[in-house]
Length: 361
Image (cartoon, rainbow, N blue to C red; front, side):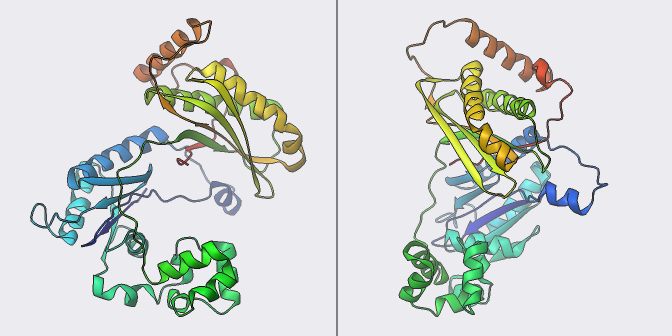
């Protein structure tokens, strides 16, 4: 499970962490007899925390993008820790020794170029892009290296004979806007010239907590979907309480067999961290979505808790005793004996599937 890290030099701003992923469904199609080992998200989370602790020791400003990606601002550290390349080498060495994981480090003047450099340096590499070599490095790369160039934009650019970043840079902003639209055209024109003024900012508190489970192509019954949702709600509400947060908005996320997606949400009148309240709301969202699911087939289900606030002295709704005490007791049992120590009867013997955290919005 390689981790990716990104860094930046004078004007230098970044370091990132990225656990590489692959499509389990695609792997099973290509190799039906493969033995699949379920992921342990708790282990990934602990590894991420350990890596971030090294980052935070190394730089005063760390911008976490997700469980697996962050930027570090290393400007002004030359006389304290060392040059950007020395910091990058130390990061790789200390994370290997203390966490036991390899990282890839990209060093550049902007966040965008640090991201590109780390991608080019994968796996387990280190790449410095000096300020006077930026465009020489960037322009020969394929257009897909630009942030925001997905399959649709890539097809459109290549259909017009534009295959490299340099060819994008050779076009005027107006030409790109007419080809891709105002926002995308201006965005890619700036990146193709390595114009990225965004500073590294301290990692903000997450605005949502969520998890999702891939279901595969087989049609799922209402009961199977409800059971999968129940397990997801148990997982995310425990994380919510561990973070000492409460939520008001519950979001159900669905992906269908045609790869389209849909979300359904409901905002509660009062913030809560109680599993029964959140489960009841999520189940209601699933119930109203069933006609759409039955028509199109559901291949992924997810739950996100949004409109988060810190737990505090708020007015509780009646009854205010049993649900809160039960949640706290179950959390303590799982903290002491593991996540599988206590579970719902409906989940006993069920395949938990592949469950991953949703990235913060």
